[in-house]
Length: 247
View 1 (cartoon, rainbow, N blue to C red):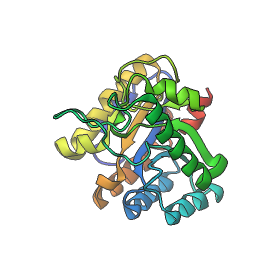
View 2 (cartoon, rainbow, N blue to C red):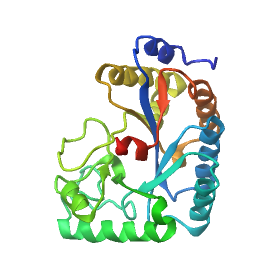
View 3 (cartoon, rainbow, N blue to C red):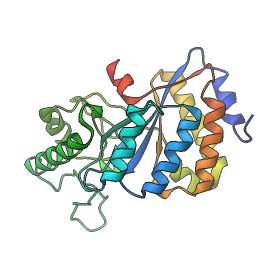
View 4 (cartoon, rainbow, N blue to C red):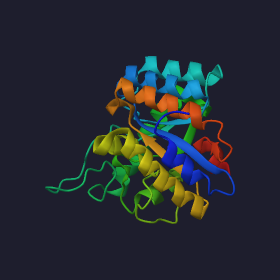
């Protein structure tokens, strides 16, 4: 057993049925070397991973590599849209960063969303999932309406975000990088146990959020070792966001 997973495994002992889990990695298009390192780590455990890709950051080399992995069956891999350019458009001093926030009119949001979607669609075709993850995990109250009008099927933000009833939502629970900064592997596993316990109680899917461009080699090794232990746990069911949305 990988060292340090005990708190998580103890929480799982009270689960009466498997908990659906998914992994969402943000900022696809930034730091391709670390992106590939993360994909290799999850592929080693054969668990699905979904990449939230920044349309204007994606280059042809990464797009070709992702397509090679998807089409070659190398690993369960999904791709969806992460903003347009990951630019903060909020203007107030001290405000929270947001690309699709209240500082932008719905029509400007619509143009950027459509631009980003079309860029990714040209690269990935039918491999592209109609899911939207807003940069910084936040967007304006009008944004879900704009997304729905453009044909998006789901929104993915942090759990606890302001509720909306326009689109299905696939929220993430655990921010790996935030917990790692706070206290390293021990903080991650204790937060994971806490958040997974909440999903055991309410029956909703558990989402793990990663930011590969902010992770070091040791973190990829740690993630790989933990996923190798957890991939076949009878009370964890690793899912793609696409499959969860289908339900």
